[in-house]
Image 1 (cartoon, helix red, strand yellow):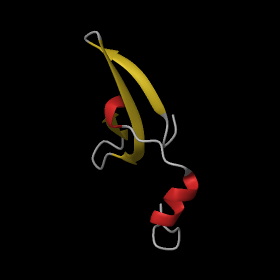
Image 2 (cartoon, rainbow, N blue to C red):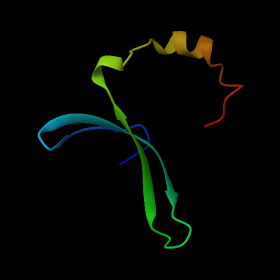
Image 3 (cartoon, rainbow, N blue to C red):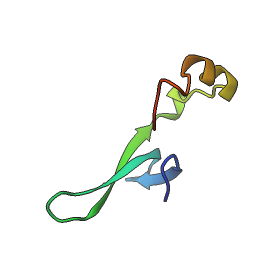
Length: 63
């Protein structure tokens, strides 16, 4: 499992798309935790990378 991965899971018979946003270690237990987002397929937008680079120049954002 890597940051940016998409998974389709079924929960109670409902299909859900999940994206892995990141990871961290829980402060008290040290357990590795995943930060995920549920993505609604109707709201998903596909944008050419070139267009995205114009909107979000790499020099202004660090990941």
